[in-house]
Amino acid sequence: MRAVAHAHPNIALIKYWGKAAGPGNVPAVPSLSITLDTLTTTTSVTASEADDIWLNGRRVDDAKIRACLTDLRERFDIPPLTVRTDNSFPTAAGLASSASGFAALITAIDRACGLKLDATERSVLARRASASAARSMFGGFVTLAGPDWHAEPLLEPDGWPLRVVIAITETLPKATSSSAGMRRSAETSPYFAPWAESAAADFHAAVEAVRARDFAALAELAEHSCLKMHGLMLSSRPGLLYWNAATVACLHRVRALREAGAAVLFTVDAGPQVKAVCLPADEARVRDALQSVPGVQQVLTTGLGPGAWAAAS
Image (cartoon, rainbow, N blue to C red; front, side, top):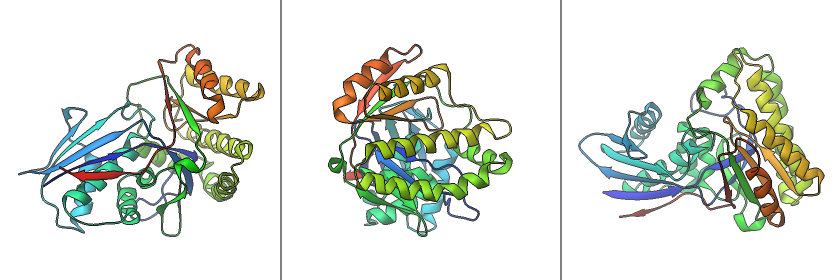
């Protein structure tokens, strides 16, 4: 019994930060994301005598993966597994490796164990492990919202083929995980309640902007959501500062590009990497501009990609 699954990270344009009260790892706010294509997580699962977890060629004792397996076994007959996951991009560095990782893991187990779950069912299970993983089950533009809190496709990748230029400013894992950071913000920030209350309006406006292919409207909403989330992080105690000097310089460079006529927006997740989303005609201009920012170690370019998929082997 063996299967191999592939999934891509997704980048939230309308951000998710914080958990709702109660079980199930339900987000406190709705979110809208784009699934990428060339950044890939590949996960294989094989029946074995005991669970054995490998990440990027190293054996690990990953609490979140073990919790995910425990959760699945409460619902399905799943044997001990050897899990091998490899990312083609930096892990735990603000590039949504947990999103693609758990989407690939759930998809691989579904195929290997013959569970025959559809993408919506797999999205719910992935959300329980990592909320952003729910969105990586689908390609293109994807929403995650209540009341059911499973991801739904909004627009296929070729429906509005935007490009994404990613400025890598640090490759080491971040000091504070997203899960720990969310708990800190919810428990200590005076701005958490206003953040949660204002998120729905941003989400619905951005969904309409995507449907209308209105880049200017989407840019304003996405950057507002990004900066509002990082303002919430900064107001936590102690403050969560995921950016470095190159991160800030890239934000200024993107704004300068837009003032000069480029159709581009920035967004930053819980990490120091800057994602510049743009129209295809502006990709080379944006890439060259970010490559010249001091402190940028590498620039990746990608388009919008498909959801998770698997094959038996």
